[in-house]
Amino acid sequence: MAASKKLTPEIITLLHQGTVIPAHPLALHPDLILDEARQRQLTQYYIASGAGGIAVGVHTTQFEIRQPRFGLLDNVLSTAAEEIEQARLTRPFIKVAGICGPTEQAVAEARLAVKYDYHLGLISMGGLSDQSEVQLVQRAIAIAKVIPVFGMDKDIIVDTRRTILVIIDMQSKPIYCNTALKLTRLRVDFFLHPARNPSPVGRNLVPATINMINAFRKNGMKVVWTDVSLHQYHVA
Image (cartoon, rainbow, N blue to C red):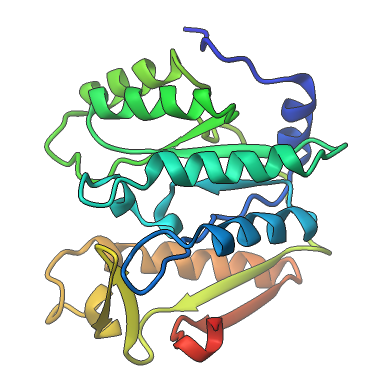
């Protein structure tokens, strides 16, 4: 079914051409209150960097902002939208809103995104393992009635001269993860090592990752390795 919100030809063209849409981080004070000034500066940074859009309310923005005790989703979405509007851009800029939760919550979040003129909804399946495939499809349809959903059902074109594959190593050493808006130290081998995590999901992705690396190298493309061990002095 057609969504109630329509994408403009300029946004559709930019999507088809390909662009960079970074995930928007979350800036907090030590007491976990939104640092609105720095949050706005982050949006300004992505606009000034030439990004083709931003994704707000997604994993990097922390899913926990939806919890009643924090209640930051509305503020985070509106703050980014305001900065984009105030930038008075003369080029298309894609606004993607993360959408989570069961159908009722997801539809409410889609309506909130439309309220702040977001173009697309990026649907998270997190926390819905108890739902059947049919239920998940019905949920996606309900969301799409409110806002176009962001997905990919066709092959993509990759410019081999301008594309690199970045491998983020989660196994090399301890990292710090913002879980439920609290800084938590994790063992990085938690993600793959059977002794740390009995779930085979992460390990099942290893062959696909190796195939991707081989495909990049076969086509003369660069493969870059990095880790995710960030400390406060990296982001101060």
